[in-house]
Amino acid sequence: MNYNNNIPKCEDCFVNNDIFRKLTNDELDVLLYIKNCNIYNKGDTIYNEGTRVTGIYCIKSGIVKHYKTGNDGKEQIIRFSKKGDIFGFRAILSGDSACTSTKVIEESSVCFIPAAHFIKLIKENSAFSMGIMKLSCIELGDANQYILDIAQKNVRERLAEILLLLNDNFGTNDNGELNIFLTREELAGIVGTATESVIRLLSEFKKDKLIELNKRKIKLLDVQKLKRLSELY
Amino acid sequence: MNYNNNIPKCEDCFVNNDIFRKLTNDELDVLLYIKNCNIYNKGDTIYNEGTRVTGIYCIKSGIVKHYKTGNDGKEQIIRFSKKGDIFGFRAILSGDSACTSTKVIEESSVCFIPAAHFIKLIKENSAFSMGIMKLSCIELGDANQYILDIAQKNVRERLAEILLLLNDNFGTNDNGELNIFLTREELAGIVGTATESVIRLLSEFKKDKLIELNKRKIKLLDVQKLKRLSELY
DNA sequence: CGGGCAGTTGACCCCGCTCAAGCGCGGTGG
DNA sequence: CCACCGCGCTTGAGCGGGGTCAACTGCCCG
Image (cartoon, rainbow over all chains, first blue to last red; front, side, top):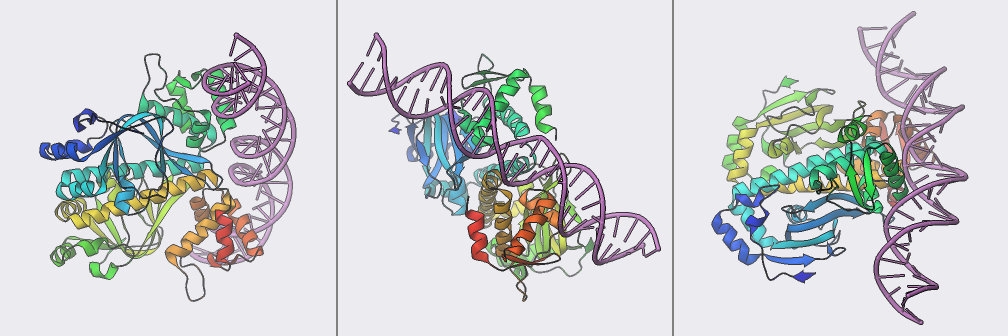
């Protein structure tokens, strides 16, 4: 992790959600002086499950994964965050320690806002507060959906669904390949299955002309069929 | 569903969470006139997944289940609510429609607060607002844990865990039996498995003297062993 | 008395996990 | 420069957890 002397302005990250748009210009100015920004390398851990979180994080660039570790040490990836996303607030607001570990999977520039200042903003700006509430409620809805999926869909359906979800969240490059590069093991950690199962299913999908594979690059060839595959039960 | 002429005071429900304690006496007085209260019978549906929710609900007595329905019609129970618990706010705050259906499993008396008034309270009372945020964040943490469990634990471990969780949430009567009576199918719907599997495992647990069974009444005999069983991986 | 639902049990078998072996590739050190 | 090592990926074999299907029972209720 390296300190970034060049603190980005919040306006640079006005994408996806609109949390910080809810702040007044004055509040944004103050924030610019209070927050700091770090560069994290691939593989760096930002915080670990079970530890105290001392503030909230907002991603300027890069991708991180949020995961829980099972008793046998296997990672279950809960979700990802990318440019404009904030994380860490669940622990702050619930008063718990972190319920997930957060690790960088693509070099990231990440701003940090101390908990006290974050709480102050929430108390003083009800639009901001409503925004945070909305975020947390949307995450909760996503988590509930995920529970249903893991409980009732089989691995093939879940893998198809995850590929579509990655497509929606990260989009594709000029080559039509997903803008996120995961190891087979990480893919297994999202789907909730064994690495070997992911590998076998990916090559099946490839054989069926649903996707194209090139190392960790994945290109979706037939989104419609993948959708049918993922919803069919 | 029947209208209840005898509107309970919020103070009657100051248990579990302390959400409404955050309101001032004046706010509580106003609320008493704005809210209404209904009696729901066992089996009644309060709202269905995918429909608009028009306000939040607070339980005076009884138990309800929140569940999602899979493509094949199978219920996945996400959580329960009981006296003092509020629900429905996720949909209001996220702006979505309901992500779960809510059905009564034990006759319930439930207060209803229209969305507009709920939002007004949130905007005007930051302690109340923080309380709601905390609730939603705790639910999110629980949901994340559930994802890990369903993804990585086997059915036996999950069933043991669910029994312990029901024990913590609902406690036992004078006979030591859990204060919640679920069908085998509902138990399967929480654990995320087939009804037959729950039946087989319950009778195994009984044979191993971990529990005692009497129709839908379940008595935990060896909490320590159940804990070991549920955590072991 | 009969219908229907919850619960139970047995038989069967398939999905997906585990284990093991082999491959390709990039980094490192001799 | 090449040999080696280790990690990620792949494939095959084997098997067991647990899902499905079917049949039967007991019980409630009309």
